[in-house]
Length: 491
Ligand code: PNW
Image 1 (tube, protein in one colour):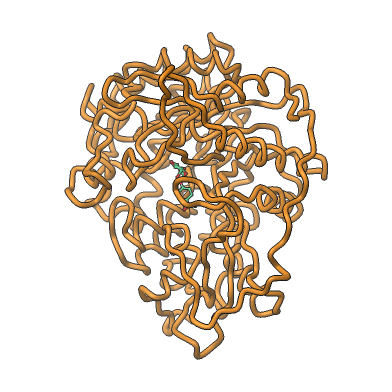
Image 2 (cartoon, helix red, strand yellow):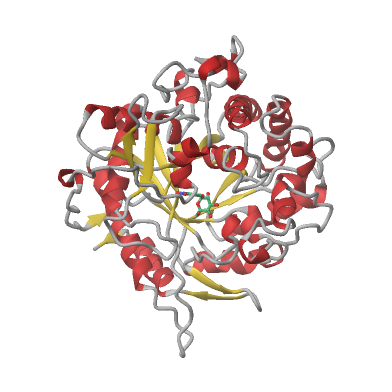
């Protein structure tokens, strides 16, 4: 019920939002039932289909640098990172990997790794400095050059329209909770697709709408650093409307363009076999995994609250759910780790969604302390495949942070990343064998880069970047992945 809907800090920490923000909580008196601590399935070799796409992913703010060049406006991430105290080590992405100037070198790296798909994003304030009005030709030219360089190298461009760098002026006008943003975003999407749609056939509308709404407007650990749960819920609804409108606008320009989205997902596993925990895990799945997918495909919100959804607080008006419709040509899934979920019994504490979420630590941990548990990826893929009628799926991100650096000979022996990739790609192979329609894998990331609130303290790349001189060095995992991309044979 909208009136009785409450959300406080404890609540935040208790949900999948909190867990994804890096919080780990074990509720007082919690008993983790050992029966649910499964043993990992043995690895089985897999031959990927001939036409499987092997890729790598990046995002504009994390790699481009050139933050105020050629007419680019300020983004919320420029603003956030320029505010002392927000990013670890006071790091900014003013220069980052300098890919705005070094994109040719980066495409050469993709070629060396035998990859045939590259997922990158367009920076909105490079195209419209203030988020509205006439496009900036220099910004558009950069992405034309990048796309052309990829096509010459026979690499398919997969372009994300929004990977979190909102023009700061639009945040000042209210940001994503402001309904007007849906129209602004649609105009921007039209500009980009009209210009680049002759050479780019594959599009993701948003990257991880859950992350940028919940971490940006509720927990405040990401830009624009707001901490207001009702603003956050409103933002989710505006994003859902924008997603539907942009989808229709792109199809109106050219119905042949393939349009999808990149959703963050995490397998939500009940902490015990109790009915209450199972139902709580379903609610966690609803809000954390399909809050932006279900409205697009089914024109309704999934059941994420023990009571009814706070539609009034979300600003849902009659007719809106039709606007949210976006029958995607493919679903992009970004996958990193699973969550354990336990129910909060009524009366045990204030809660809107009625569950605790905490990080699993049964498997090995990466240097970012995220658990490595490949089976959970296979389970999640099969669940989505089953529940949404076998959609075409692209893995738009999957990866891990390890801090391995060059040895004396200049080599980067990152065996743990190789083990991670082998395990997670094995899970993809397993899901394909069981009938999931998965056609691409993009490793996050091509390069070590600016890892949001972590700055440069995490390294997700298959290619090491020395940020003092921009020297790129392929890690052992990159060579390993390159060989796999050439043969398709995971053994
Ligand atoms: C993704 N979690 O974000 C983003 O799309 C990338 O830009 C980012 O660099 C990458 O994953 C690695 O973090 C996530 O808490 C943020 O599980 C948080 C989570 C997962 C993905």
